[in-house]
Image (cartoon, rainbow over all chains, first blue to last red; front, top):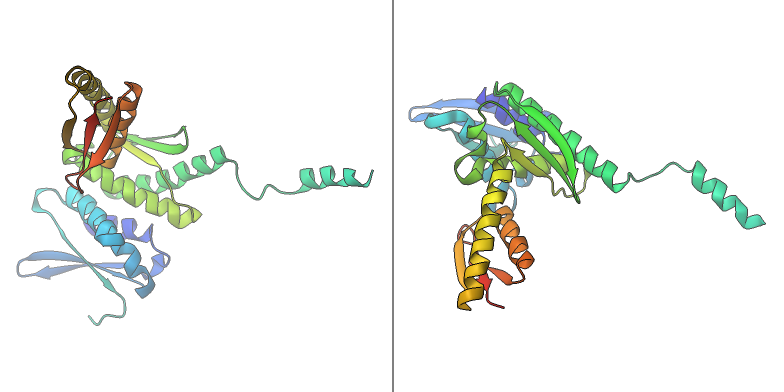
Length: 80
Length: 171
């Protein structure tokens, strides 16, 4: 559910919604939701002073409940 | 007269820009689509209500338990409003000042703040001394500034976020 919610929130605000993918990466210390966007959209999802990224994290954190969720933004050019 | 043709042309021309109200209604529709799908994904029940209040589109979500979408001091609500405005901007290319409310949080908050402002204004009028209020969100400060102006006094915002707060000044 969190992955879908995050994908929807991000797709709605970028210029290249089809390039948005969210991956739930399982790490030893909990999971991290990795959002990949078109390079031109990275600035958009981060926002001025990180404002948009903070808003996305706040909403996802609220939906995640007490366990919380970590959200990371990268552009599609970065190697996996 | 030859000028008469202009009238005909004007009526025939398609209105290129929507009226103000139509634009705000369109903002509400875009916002509702964005929010409705989020509720769907999160499996939350909520009814959406769209309106135009003054010069802004207003969307409110009412549901059984949406307190997690309001958050402590409305911080989740503010975040969701921010994202919704961006979603509207993406579609229209125009910055949106849309107001989002969830479970009447803003409405209740507005009422409490107006009461606080009226009490503070009375205090400042009596003492002639400025009074600083607690830090508030931009929405909350706006409500207080408006209420203070209504009471015939002036107020300013001081400090930086998240400690930015209203100071009520004596006349």
